Amino acid sequence: LSLTFRPTTEPLTATHSYDDADSFTKVKSKKTQKRKRGPDGADMDTDGPAATKRPQFPPISGDRLRGPDEMRKVAVPAHRYTPLKENWLKIFTPIVENLQLQVRFNLKTRNVEIKTCKDTQDIASLTKATDFVKAFVLGFQVEDALALLRLDELFLESFDVTDVKPLKGDHLSRAIGRVAGKGGKTKFTIENVTKTRIVLAETKVHILGSFQNIKMARTAICNLILGSPPSKVYGNIRVVASRTAERF
Image 1 (cartoon, one colour):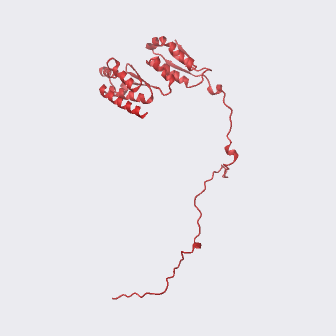
Image 2: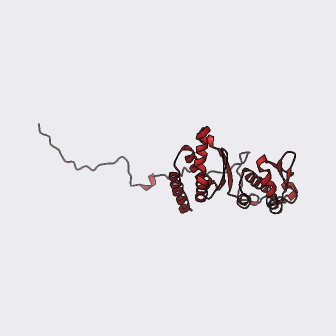
Image 3: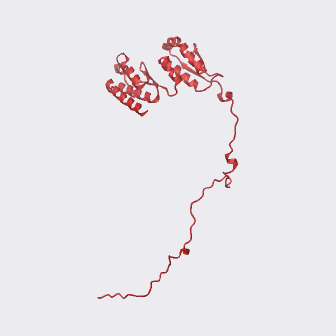
C-alpha cells in the first residue's frame, strides 16, 4: 500500500479568534472586605471621634484601695524560743521601721503575729515579713533571712530526706551525714558554689536562695542522699554553676 499526501492551498480557518482583546471581560477581585458590625447588624463607624474617646475615672483613695487590715501568724517551736528572744530586736526593727507593719509575740499561742496598719504602703510587705520570720524560725541566721526583705527573687524551699528515698535507722543517719560532711564541709561547699543557704534540721532540709540556685542545691543534696560520692557531686554542681555564670 502506498500513501500519498496532497498539499492543500486553502487557508486554515480558526473557529475562535484570540487576538481580539475586547473578547475578554475583567473579573472583579474576590477578596472580601471584612467590616465591623454592630449588634444590630449595621456597620460600625470606627473612624469617628467617639472611638478615640476613653472614659476618665477619678483616682481611688488609699483607704479604699488598701482594704481591711490583715494579719499573719508564724508558729514558733520550743527550741527556737531562746534564739527568738536574743534576736528579737534585729527581727522587730526592719519589720516595723522599713515595712511599716505591726508585730508582736503572743505568749499564750506562742505565735509571732504580723499585722498591717494605716501606715502600710505596700500590701506585699506582709508576705515578705512572714517569710522573713519563717526563715528565722526554720533555723537561718537573721542576716541571711534579711535578704528576703531586700530582694524579690529569693524563696524558701523545704523537703524531707525520706521524700527522696525511704530510709530508716542507720541508713537515714548515714544519708544525713553525707549531706553535712565532716564538720559541715559538704554543706558549706554546696552553699558556696550554688550561692544558697542550707539548714539541716534532723530529717528536714531547708534551702534559701533564688529559684535557679535552689534547683542546683536540691539536685546536689538529692544525689548525696541517693548515695553518690561527694567528689562526683562537687564536679557536677561546679559544671552547672559555670554554665549558669556564662549564660548570664
